[in-house]
Length: 373
Image (cartoon, rainbow, N blue to C red; front, top):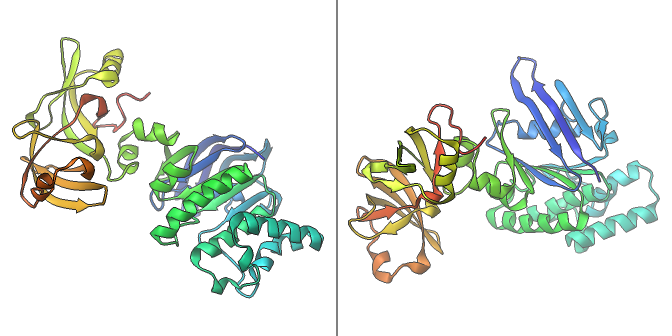
């Protein structure tokens, strides 16, 4: 088992394009850390620098206290699972998993023990004599994971391992990776562009954009207190609603007035604004779709319904305010009467509201969260 430390790691390509900027991160022993962000943000490049597959332009990478910048990938004691499985098509599943062990000239009886143990953990024992072409995508990914497992490596690196699977298989494999992590009890670094994978798998998330770290924290921390507008809109589905409005301060209390409706910022959010003595002025107000509720007719914010997406246990309502601002509202179906659901059609008037305790406040210039240091 091992810790991983990246200090001021930078990747610069020959055309002076900086793909990763001064990446600093301490990953604890047995921690599951997920790098997440849109395509081109530098997450896979960072993972490949840890693996030794990309040269580090500046900075250092340490594994278990040892600087590995100049070590070959095979000497870093890491195991990597790739997006495209990277299996040998002419070999059986058994031989694919055993390949790296045979390169180490390990005795065949020990290889057999390791391969069969890994196959049992992953539920692929019955496929050991098959070729990869006879397997489904999920089964091939299990084989790729098994090949990494048998190496007894200090660190597991996984580069978008589920991106080639369909939605049902992705859900199944996410659960299996969680179970695998509990069985292996080792250090995982996992790359994905899917925020659902990041939220469900990680102890800590590293959210990246354009080669920069935007926030590092637990899934709950990144969801409940996004450090900036990018994180706020990236984490959560549907994404957070953002509205330009004013923060008002009256008699020691704070209010916002989106769409001409005055709402008090109460609870912990109001107390924190007061503690920080945040000045009144223009802000970007964020409210997640699930924190907006339907209000009685004539109350709250007046909107009209444009799109009603039936998602099973909930409705995703796309509504427009009187000034044509688009908002998304998540409404649980269990609390709606048949008459209410029948009335949710194109153009129907809907009144919505939200409480002060669920609001997020961002500086319109820096886009930083006003309640984050």
